[in-house]
Image (tube, rainbow, N blue to C red; front, side, top):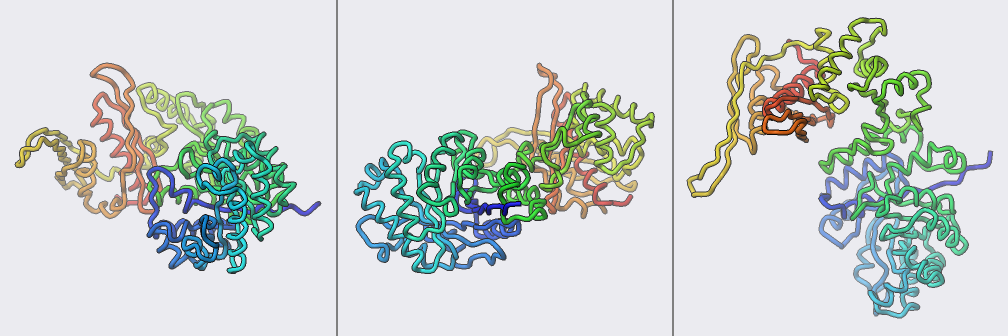
Length: 533
């Protein structure tokens, strides 16, 4: 077999990802994410732009210790009117301990004329001199050819002249950037193939943005056209619509036959099994819920709902799954719903550790209960913790840890002592544990928050089990119209280990529906952690 060609993977989460709306990395965040990226087995980790802001400056002052990846600094080519040696911004980028340096420069003649307002030859010289200086200073040099695809479409000869200059100056990688994300796969393949006639594929890379939802497809098309270096971010983070998502690119390169046969990455198959955990860990650091429908790593990526579908899967799972879920650290989920048959039910019971005999008559009863409850408004395909509790309660496996003898929630709108109009939410709960009645009172920033705080304020000897329990998402859906509408509440909870689970409650009263979901969440945590009655 012919030796496979190496594809080098470059992560720019810590810079491009920081441009995502709502994302703001601290130094500690950057250190934790860099460690995760290094553990995955990436070739390059771009740390940011030293000197551009206090966070990046502090991060580069005490950089992470990486085991395999090359720590990389980002900056720009020298400014007009000064030499590369006398440019203070370039000096800040080159004067650090990063093994590699990626310098961005203009390759679209329109930008050179209108934004830089310098001669086109001067821009080419700036690219060449800056990269040559980076090489002289001992760095592995990369050139980020900004807006290359737009520049090529407008003036291909000038765009090619810019990347040729970077390559001649010693750039290890010349990275063609689709900066506004507007290119399509057929354009990318044609343009990269042409660029590879001027810069060898062994020195050619791409950086795609996702404004047409084609960043992953464009990156793979570029590899087929000759590029051997791919840049992107974890979970596709980035400004506007994001960057090429390495979480999707990596398994596509490693597991899809047309790529795996001809190419290899620096990530091992064991490393690939960490992909789901690392994707979710990055979201956890950013306090973002993971995308349940994300390719490869989402909770729904290998979820199956239809009964006939699941019956067929029992005979041949690859018919319905494009890769084994375990190969990327994910798992198959068989959803139980009013559309489900016995196959779904048995498969989901196995997922939660219950071995069921297909001939057991209780399965028919359980399936009937699920369908009856979903008719009332419950949804168990999205609330697996509530489903597990439903099953285990029917089997007599869930202890009665506590009993709620009653609760009360009220909201008062009034003027405070300063005369300002305020809204105050309060809740009380009467909880019986081991025959002892505990009464709790709490205020909250809303009635549900107040009730949640009151329920968890004092659970007696169980309090230690829920110290790290946190409600992270709360969704309400009105199922029927009118003021007496039936309401479904879905709650997402997590604990200090990063585990997440979903519970559901249904009632004509939104507070009572919330109460049901909250009690399931607490009970599930106690059962899962082995609390004893």
